[in-house]
Image (cartoon, rainbow, N blue to C red; front, top):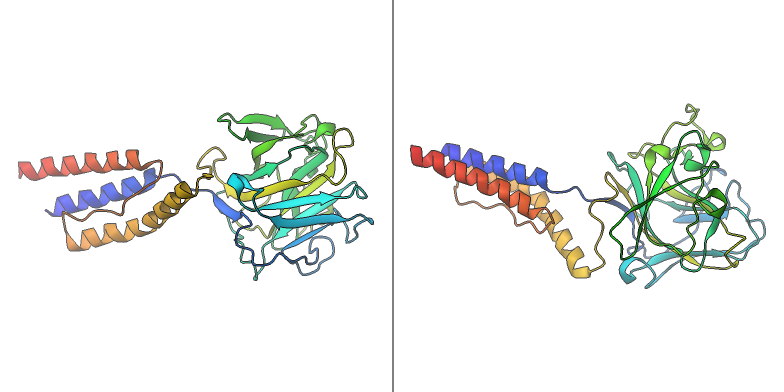
Length: 321
């Protein structure tokens, strides 16, 4: 009996490790009770709010009007999204979303290799744009600093498609029509390797070595530099950003737009949190009829298969006794 219990416990752990690791969400803009501007800690050493927008490398706004707000129905699956636009007076806009004690956005994503974000660029495009991150020391990391030192790929999955497309930042470390990677009208998921988010020379407050990459375990904010395309886009055009994540595999565990499926995924995660406790209880009680928490993940079938094989082996061993 003891051997059966041990084997069931091992099967539970095997099932646990067959389940995929979900992407870690920075924000999907659903839980903000308010969305307030603050200072720019990167270049002005000010206390941050939920966001900051302005001329990308100073405290001014170059006299333009930049609009940034959370809106309903424009995000992934009809959810909330961040809507951004400006009136054309500023050719280079910096947009930052910060984690603060008030908004309680997470700041550590150990093991993450990609920034994955849902975007809607319907009816507009960029001359140049790039994403980046800010760390707890207010250092800024982005692809803009690579400047052709190596090929900076990024990836796009169009809404309704199942095929990711590989694209490349240009020699200025940006994407856009001036960089040979036009995203006019694109709508869907984008993924950017974190290894390409390297320290900006003029925001290197910790004297890091040139081209030092960001640390996914130290994320204080997400950054977007952008300016409108002067070929295809009318100033004032609005674009939308949603579901900012840090993930190990950009192709895996994409969120579902179906609320019922997302609820099932949440229940699955809760079940995973309980799995270890159940396995321990089974080992302690030596109860052969103990059953692990049900899983609803897409990997439930391989997990069950591992468990059934272990149970069959245990039953065979018991019969021989």
